[in-house]
Image 1 (cartoon, rainbow, N blue to C red):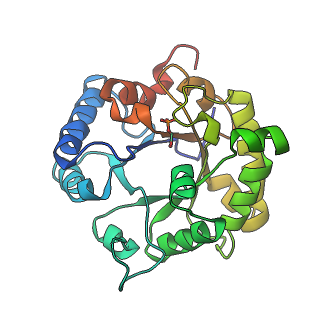
Image 2: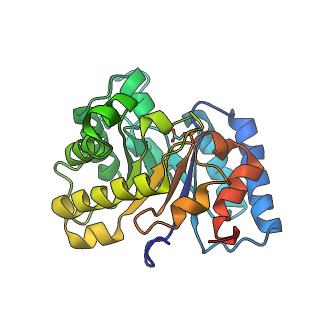
Length: 263
Ligand code: PGA
């Protein structure tokens, strides 16, 4: 099991799915599903990461109905304000009570040319505005074959943590690119091995206390049927869930992994 003291974090990355009306209906249904199942709100932290256009509606709902979900965004600008058409400032996100920002997701690295340098700047932009970056790292299938599982994620995390101070609040997500949306998750053993190595990187860069407190998530084809096996590993403190996070029953079951047989 993930170590006591680090609250498990189940984070749903909706990607470009659900408009703001669908988002409101989804969050209500997920909340009802957890309530009906008698889920203990304090047992895990639940995060939803809707598209930008949904954030205000979801924030209003969470606030009005006192729903115990944390709100996250899927990206943030490296700039704070100014002539940057189409960009979203961390300042705006903070005003919406957004707590987390996904930074360096492989889809942004791949389709939007985000380099380690840009990812590092986005980590800084998040921290500047009191947002916790969920720093995504992971190797492609070619990287895996050529360098093994850890080399690329380690290098990506080292770069992302450049200039980050020891007291900073961060979350790390290990997401092998070949496992994202493929239905082929990493084995818990491989994920554990890489997550343990990433924790060492946090220790080297930010110190032992930060390494002890930082949550490291696994992501890539997580579903209700495999979440428990990941959560059993000592260095896996949660999951970043894509496809399964926009299906109410599936995400609800993932959040309630502690109830699954054998955990
Ligand atoms: P998946 O995506 O769960 O659909 O594989 C994970 C992610 O991209 O964060």
